[in-house]
Amino acid sequence: MKPANNHGIKRIFRATGFSMKGLKAAWIHEAAFRQELMLAVVMLPVAFLVDISTMERLMLILTLFIVLIVELLNSAIEAVVDRVGSEIHHLSGQAKDIASAAVFMSLALCGITWLIVLLPLLV
Picture 1 (cartoon, rainbow, N blue to C red):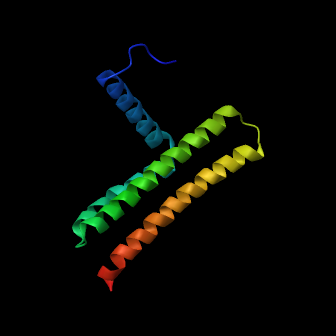
Picture 2: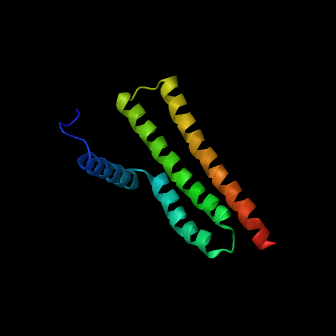
Picture 3: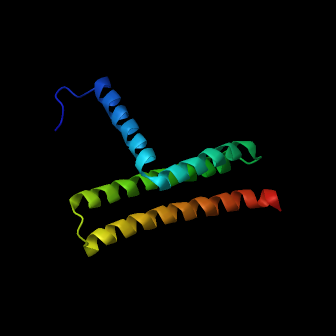
């Protein structure tokens, strides 16, 4: 149900609160999100410490955020599918598998990007 008089700065504060609530829920209930967030926390300083161009640095950082964003969407899809029902249905499985594939693709993108950017520094 939409709250009355939910516009302007009040709406922004409420939306931010809901976003923080979602991040907290993902941290508490989603092991994959915790793992990927911790990986990002470790890798983010590396992106700032290596001697690369600003565009390359931006690509490294963006791919870390893409992984986290896709994982949040995957978790949301899984939660909705689980909420709808516990019986096994091929479409429920298909939705979960496709969302999982999106996470896999984002991780592959991240890995390939980091490899392409950092490999010349290692050889």
